[in-house]
Length: 87
Image 1 (cartoon, rainbow, N blue to C red):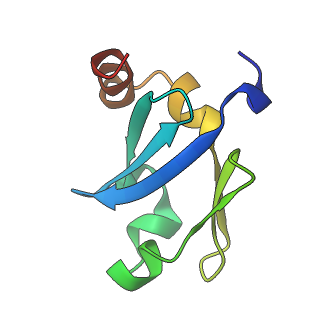
Image 2 (image 1 turned 60 degrees about the horizontal axis):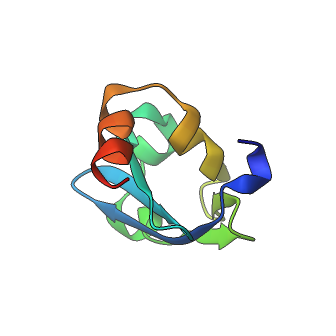
């Protein structure tokens, strides 16, 4: 898939993980500990993010941006298992 094929409709923080849900219902997650700026943020800062046009997450206070594609194309055990379970 290409970068713009990943269109997130929902994102949330739970259990020290960032979860994203695509328009087609697939869900993936990545650990907050993978991102130093997020790992050092407090709960209020973590929950203050925006979904940018469905393709990225942006934390304005932290200056952090994550692509939605990265949640589905980064081969980590935790997000691959999540994608498989929700397919």
